Image (cartoon, rainbow, N blue to C red; front, side, top):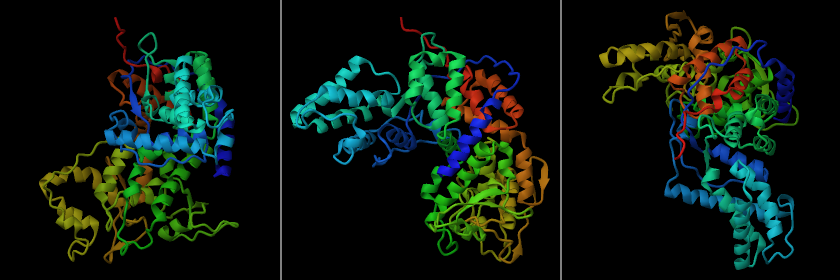
Length: 542
């Protein structure tokens, strides 16, 4: 992974000079969206703890789930609060994290000072510790009055408990359970139509790195540099050149692709014995490595993710795909990764043939062309497919041993004769059937129940004969790139673009095309735009 990240840094650094277009089109005006308050995701919470206290600190506990809104958990994070049980969970996690930080095993390396007396308060040392972390945890400059309060709390607890470190732990835990940490609250600037500098820093850092602002970004915010276009661009380019950009890209695509579902994915062990515990983890990682390598290391065209024959495999995945994967060097772990290129003509082509797509969008014991086609439209083309009526009879579809309708195509044809089913199946099944060569675990097959599988179909009037043809049609579909642009912007801004932002989204879509559909250029356009930090005009208090 370190070698992979070094390649990423080198590639992005070399390319930063070409991210800005030679002659930039003027950014259209926008009304902005509402002020957003988002709860930290579990990954963001854990990443901030790692950033502030180091990788040795573990986060132990369970987080309350977020709903998926308009295809993204990132939008659902702005629709949730914290229940009583959830608050108790945050309190327990905060105490555990703080206790780890001040523990005898960690205090010498994690704390910048030693108290004069371990069994008594030491305000100077407590101020040094709390001052070093409070800005990062609150994602803004903490006032002297706030820091005084934190130091007083640590001193009072230390005096009562006769233990400096126990008192410090309680004050640290108070920081970690604060709503200012758990929620990303955006504050309007004086004009009322943009967010303030520290809110800008947070929005930027969670977008590009999926974590809170680092010390340099907070410094720039405090100095007013983020309110200057050149200063903002310097910070954006610094962040795009960082290996932490991979974290941000992974976070976005994990959300977009719905990989949270891997936590509960199961397969029938009798029908799919090769799909055991390591497969879901490796399937998700295969797709993430392919995306990062193609979009960040190679700086490739986003559309080519659907036609590329380059990927990464482990022996575990090789067994599923029936591809021999040789162990390399001294690493003989089941999840040792090797780069792999499928030969021309191989049915494995692009993301649609990854187990992360075909296995994730299947039932435990059988495929589902309908579910796969629905996912293809909703995830990649932003086209909503209605849910089936509650009284639909799926008996024929589920009968994989049917002596008359032996293939999924035949069973769906018989099922779709019901009037209430015909419309939706027409917009999902033709694409899903092209993926029928891949079983519910992602393994390749040529027939079902002894009958050759027919993978021909069409998507929005464009015909194809197999999955390679489908992948090319997806590659060329105009909704593919416009969907990514709209969804990336919604993910970054925390709200679905409104009517007043339509012109800006079109501007981004045109720019994405001009930039040869390179993701870093799209990220830069958004991050350096005025629209990204604009909000609907806020009424000033009277």
